[in-house]
Structures are given as structure tokens and as C-alpha cells.
Length: 140
Image (tube, rainbow, N blue to C red):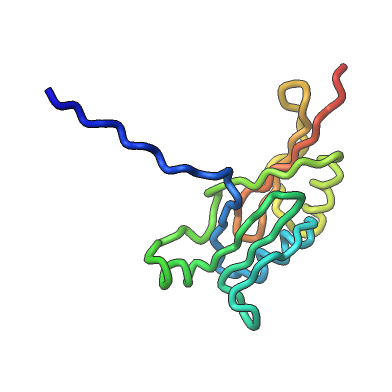
């Protein structure tokens, strides 16, 4: 009996970036810039962008236009809702949550202790993607 030979898996490198889809790339990029992300890439370089990459301490997020993703790649991304979550670690989750919600970000879940070792709060970016704010609590 001839058994199929297992195929060798392609070699992947560690994940470099998560792309989020947005109806308004500029608005989404501005939100993450206010969180401390720095713009590293933009297409086109002048005018209204269809894609922006941002980085914070090695963590990269891409913001891709829904319209250009449909036109350029033939995909049909969902432009809003809780499709993915951006997780940001902080030294003060309660203060970060208070600042973001005071600036207009939706309050999804107030700061709460989880597993007796983490303080977690949830808000959202302008496109409805949840943003989880996580803080290690001292052992005790």
C-alpha cells in the first residue's frame, strides 16, 4: 500500500504584525498613536492612507482600509465589531482605562481582578476592536 508522504511544512518566522480593517484608516491610526504607537509605514506616503503600520515596543499593528482590501486583494473584511482584540500591558490598568474612556473610547469592562494576579480592563478602538488593558498584580 502506498502511503502519501508527509509534506514538509513551510518555514514561518514569528508573527510580525496583526492587521485590523478600518473604514477610516487615519482615525484608527490616530487612536493607536495616542496610545504611544509610532507610525512606521504608510501607503500612499501622501494623502489619505489605505494602510498604516504602527509599532510599540516591538508590537506591530497594521491598519488596512476595508475598501482597498476588497479592491486590491478580493477579500471582504467585516469593517466593525469585535473581530480581534489588541492586548496592551501596562503598569496601571485602572489609570489607562480611565484615560481612554475619558477621551471617548467605549467602556467595555471596568478594571477587575482576574486569576488573583492580573488587573484587566476592556475598552475599544474607533472601529469596535476590543482593547484589553492588563496589569500584573503583586504576589501576596
